[in-house]
Image (cartoon, rainbow, N blue to C red; front, top):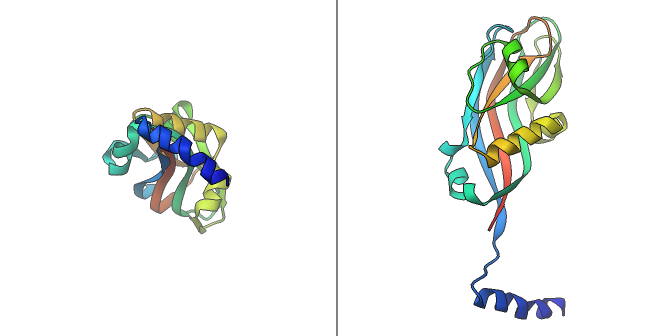
Length: 177
């Protein structure tokens, strides 16, 4: 019965030219393989969402981020345990040391504990548990802004070497007009 009461309202909105549309869309950005051989040889992955068709198509309608994840395989290449962190910087940056990243970025995911020579698959649930509030805020700011940011994978401390393979940044975006 409630549905029948809503029909006249929806018909009136449609007749007046007011169409309600909303939904979610997923933007996937391939991070590829990242090799970090030491704290002084950090590699940033520059993310330009403007290169993604779905992002460009819905860019003007973005309301919020519903969810986000960093997925892939992370491997500790050393014989000592390692705490892995993901840092984001706004815009397209090219820092080469973890000190530069820490001074200019935001800790966004982590830490993720890896044993000696351990490789771990980071899935959606694990990624969600590692996301920091500051990282979520920066990611949403950049997605709603110019769509550019840089992802850095670093060790929490000490000398480290790590590899990320099949890396992906996924965002589920709420959109509507």
